Length: 219
Image (tube, rainbow, N blue to C red; front, side):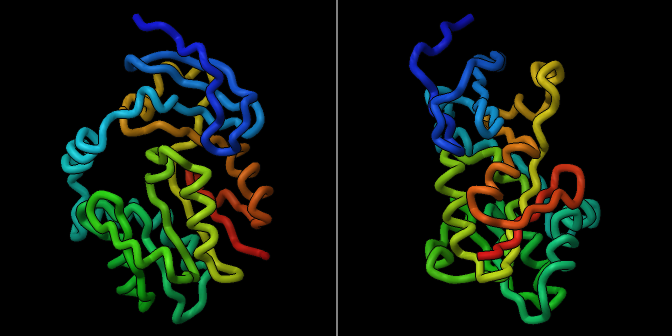
């Protein structure tokens, strides 16, 4: 057992203090934001950079794995439906074995990669893109407001930001939800959270598949 934190936990997505204790498990606490509906883990429970790296090193997502490629098409195809020939993109959080970028390049789209652990190329933040993919990454963000604002700012007008993550289940299902057992997962988004974000950014938003959301930069 552990003692609940006594300080007010600000929401890391909208910075609201209108948050409340939500659940406990995995030797950590979860809070919910009553404004944007994000469920999040307080910073005091974040694991170290080294521990995160060990977890990610265990991933076995290989570029030539056809099953993995089919999985990535869930986020790739909605982007292909919304970009024109010659578009250039960024796969943010590409992992130890970049695959999605290679899939886009096989379709003729130049695609840069960035990963804080495996490809920390800061030059990408000084460029502009027609599309950005963020596949199974936002749940790891320690500072989701900063990361998402930064990514959106890199888009050209009518650019596409595509995000894939497991959407927040019902409150009854959350305590036994497999997705929260990963200690590198610290932010859990609902569709309402993404609608809040779209309104804040002035973006057009569409949930195109289960657990996939697309933002189009309108202004």
